[in-house]
Every structure is written in C-alpha cells, then in structure tokens.
Image (tube, rainbow, N blue to C red; front, side, top):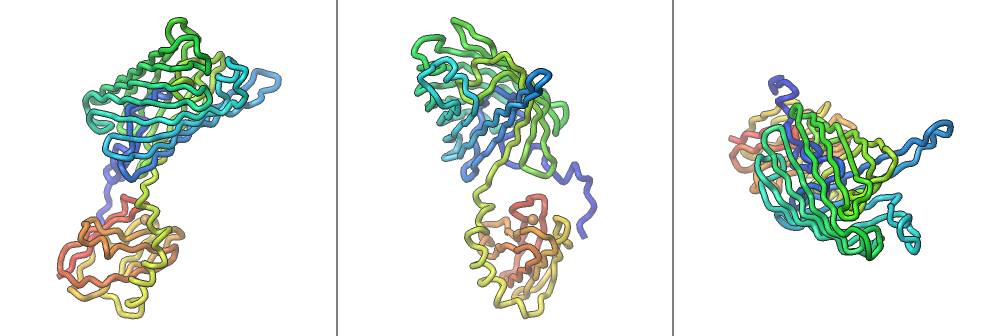
Length: 353
Ligand code: CU
C-alpha cells in the first residue's frame, strides 16, 4: 500500500508547469510564456461598489488567453471591459478592449532565481494602436522584482498624448504557497493618474492553479489599460488555468481506447486489480508476469487515466470513464510507472517479470 505521506510533501510547491501568480503582481504583464502544448487562461474579475445609498456593483471582467507556440515564444490575447479609450476618444464607441500580443522571453524558467526579460509587441484593436512592452523581472529566493517600459502608438486611441509608460512592482513569497505583491505604473510626460495594484496570491495545493485576491485602480489588463488609472478603487480576484492539450485526448480517443484496450480482455481474469477511489490508485505497485493483465476499476464519478510515463509505453495508456474499467495486457517485462493526466499526484507502478 502507498505509505501515508504528509500532504505538503505530496504536492509540488510551484504549480505544475503553469503560469503562477506567485511571480507576478496584478498590473504587470510579467515575462511568462506558457510551455508548448499549453494554453493558459487567466481570468481576472474586478468590481467596483458605488457609494451609499445605491451600493451598485459594477463588474470588470477581463481575461488573458495565451498559447506557447515555441520554446520561450507565446501568442496571446488580452480582453477587458470598461475601457478608458471611448471616454477619451468619442469616435470609439465599444468599451471592450482587445489586445493581441506576441511575447518572447529570455531567462530562466519562471520561479527560478535569476533575471528574465520579455519583449511583447502588441496590437490594441480598440485604440487601433501598435503597442509594446519590455518587461524584466529578477527573482532571488522569496523575492521577485519587476519592471516594465511601454510604448504606444496611439495612447487611449489618440495620436497625441504621452506615448510611453513605466511600471514597477514586487512579489514577496511568505511561504511556498502564499505571496503578497504590489505595483505602480504611469504614463510619462504628461503624466496621468497612476495605476496601482496589490494582491494576496496563493497556490491551490495539488493543482496547477493559482488564485489571488486583488485591489487596484486599473480597469483593463492591456498595455494601455495597465498604464492609466481611474479614480475608483476596485476589488476582485484572478484565477490561472493552464489547459494542457494532452489532457483533452480522451475527448477524441475515448471510444477508440475503450474498444481497443478494454474489450478483448474484459472477460479474462486479471492477475492484478487496482481500485481507483477518492483520487488515488488503491495499490501503488502491482507485480505480474509477462502476458498477464492488470485491471483498473474506477469507483469515482469522474474520469481518470492510466498514462504511462515512458514514451515507449505510451501506446498502453488508456482512459477510464466514470465508474468505468480498463484492462491492459503487458507482454514485455519491465517497470511501468504511470500517472493520471487530470490528477498528476495520482501515481502507480506496474512491475512485469
Ligand atoms: Cu485521476
């Protein structure tokens, strides 16, 4: 049986290959790029509560969608509502701001000590402006310092006005799971109301997600939106969601796998059985002889996979529907470690003699 491991040791301190709010403050784009094969969806929701007596709540949803297209290279989309651009440029009527961007980063992986720099050319579709940012950050132990220099062809949709902005911030990680961060930013010459933001960020243990509670006066998460503040104080949260495309394989291959792997062996006696219940493989090591069958039985109400770690064994991998079963015959002696794709802390080993 699997030994009882203290929970804190069973999970990774850094989120599992994901963009983390423990290394970025609320209004700095940061230097991150998703890994190849990962689409990062970061959802930020801020709101403003009007003073008494109305207490009307105005919501400011925004999101970032970014894909790793090559090592250190990402394409992304920032979307925010309640843009400042139409208030400054009356010919612009939509208040939803979209920014398409590319980012190239150079430096150690996020969370590693050292200095990173990222170049982010962007197109702000509402302002019809070519924008850009050079972001830097420096991480040493529990501290990350961040800086950004920004240029805008048409700030807030106008051809005049300040075309540059600077911003800076820091993150202090209090533990492996909790951090505080803050930042300021402003257009330069002529200056406008500066942006500021502060956050309390956490890693959700055992998951690739981070979550932060935020307060800020920046309504939109674009290069332009992060450079000019408003007079209202907003509160809200951000949630980071890495979508590993390989996790979606069962959408497309589930029925094929069930037929190909399950069907021939389902009525044959299995040499070993692994019960999956409560997000764990019941016995983490099973030992069989070559040519024998291992059966997995899923008692959970959601899907798991038996995904072999070694590329040579990838063809054996399969998915279990909720309450489903999976039987796999092992013909080659060897040691076959495996895990569950949606729940990477679920691990097991098949030893074939
Ligand atoms: Cu699972």
